[in-house]
Length: 74
Image (cartoon, rainbow, N blue to C red; front, side, top):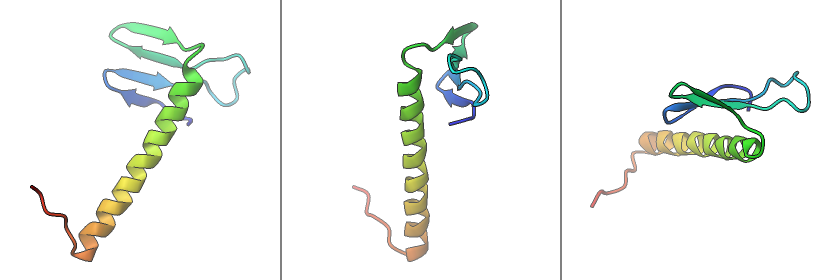
């Protein structure tokens, strides 16, 4: 993940790929800026998985709309 991502009221900005090995991403919003030291890898992995899930759902919904098949709502 190499781009800033909005997470509710906050924005996660990963460390640049070319930065030093000890550089950390930040979470900022509401006038606060926090350098992530322990949780960055976990947050980055979660956001990557969430992005993949959103792409998969988008593909499924798109193909469902083209197939003429729609699920019934109860």
